[in-house]
Length: 128
Image 1 (cartoon, rainbow, N blue to C red):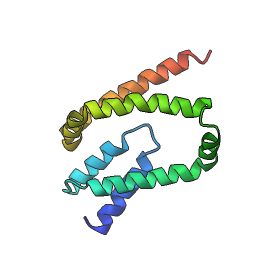
Image 2: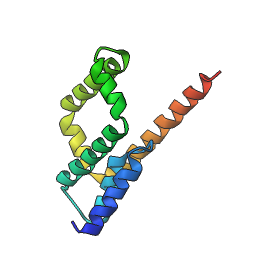
Image 3: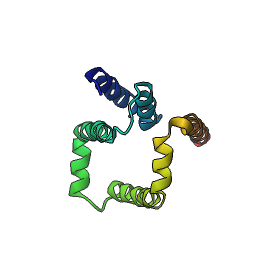
Image 4: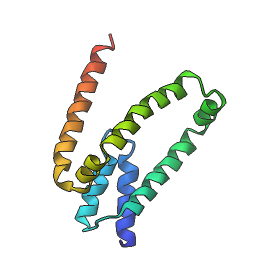
């Protein structure tokens, strides 16, 4: 991987992580465009950099959660993490096979878009 490719992929990760789109999916697309395969170390590095950025921005909130670990927000985070972790462990091979193939990305983006549209319509109805 060249420095230019690494910079472009880092920018893709940074620009798409906080949008309601799949940053990982977009990384896969750009990796395929560059002809890159099996760059898991780079993927981990850019996601770790995102984690560092999130921790820097939400430092006060994180410290508050550490001071009061049994308040509502930490418990909600744990409650949301457990099912996600179980699904990830149980379907690990399935998700890896799909993620390693860019063939299904268009379909996955379409599903994500439909879920976001549905969520927005439900949110709009509850505003009144």
